[in-house]
Amino acid sequence: MADELIKASFKSTIIGSTGGFLREGNTTFLVGVEDEELANLKVVLEQSCQSREQVVNMMPYETAQPGAFVAAPVKVPVGGAVLFVMDVEQFHRF
Image 1 (cartoon, helix red, strand yellow):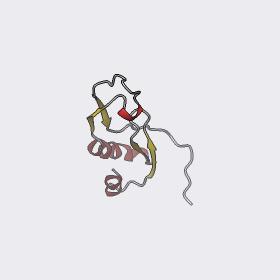
Image 2 (cartoon, one colour; image 1 turned 90 degrees about the vertical axis):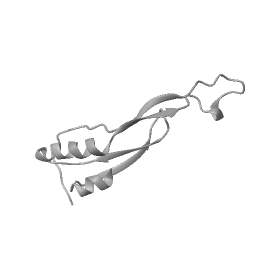
Image 3 (cartoon, one colour; image 1 turned 135 degrees about the vertical axis):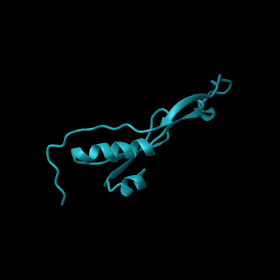
C-alpha cells in the first residue's frame, strides 16, 4: 500500500497496530490531501486494498483448557480499507 501511495505522489505517515479479534497486525495510513485530490486517493485505496476471507480458529489450542470443546474454524472477512475524511482547520509543515 505504501508503494502505491508514493507512486501516486501521496505523502503519508504509517502507524502500526494489532487488531483485537484476530490479534494480527494492522496498518493505519495518515494522508493529508486537498479536496480536489480526494477522488484520486479513493481510487488508489480501492485498487490496493481488497478484502478477502480468512479461516480462523475461534479458540486457539494453547488457550483452551484440557478437554475443552474447541469450535470449528470459521471464515471471517479480513483486509480492505476504511477511509475517514475529516476537515483540517490548519496545517503547518516545518
